[in-house]
Image (cartoon, rainbow, N blue to C red; front, side, top):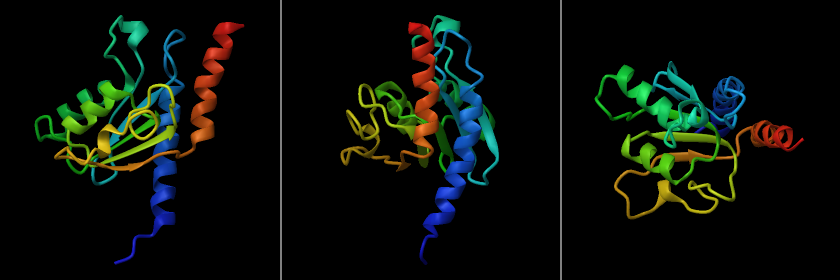
Length: 159
């Protein structure tokens, strides 16, 4: 059976638009990054924006917060097998580790992050062949729009 790559990309773009809306809800002090976890049926399980500054918590990245919420709703303890995590910026090492440990089946991200990205840019934690669990990864989805949010945030702070 051939995979309809066009349909996969359209679905990924639709999910990314939700994550972009979530990113826009980040507080004024937090980098606007949004993450959404969808179940295997496409139903949204959880969403979160960065809250590191708001919470004074170095682990309060959008991905970690969304994973925490999703595990409470998914019903399989900490495992999110069959789920898709969509995030506006390539996950860092901490987030990539959490994604792998949560057994997320698919990761979709927007902007590449060459300084801290751990899903293909600086490192590739999720696809390391030594790991037991390696999710499918689709990067660069609506990358320009996702990058513009972050670039605009830092430009405004420097002004």
